[in-house]
Image (tube, rainbow, N blue to C red; front, top):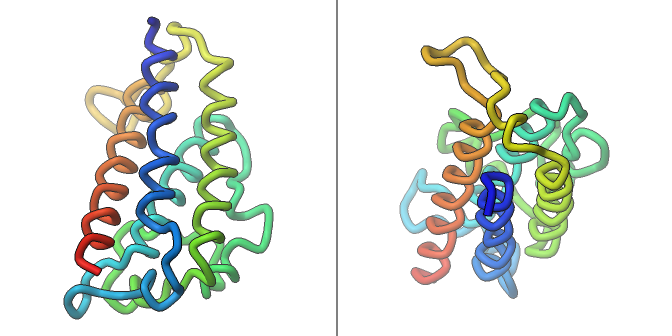
Length: 165
């Protein structure tokens, strides 16, 4: 198994985690907070998808899926550039997915593009520097691992919240 296959395997596990976290939940349940100011299931899944969409689009040199459709309005938002990074409690509460299906549809679109992108990579591609603002510079491989790690953590948090419901 080469590095690309390991990344494909890792990203391939995320859709089930996302679906399990949101399947069958109402819009109200997606916006439920276990404590004032806490993240919601809807925000966590929206955010993990936004991060993957943003970061993968950037390394591909492509437009984000979120910006190519009416996704923002499906989440009660107006700004198609929001990713959730640095959101305060009021911004978290403003993310209001219309349904669990909207979350899974958006995630599926992003996931499918990510897996398609991974399929075309070589091990040498993973060594390409994609961000030289860090020391050491960030390679494509490191960026993709970072995206996967962030997504897996947030999917786990969403599953935990679902258990609290």
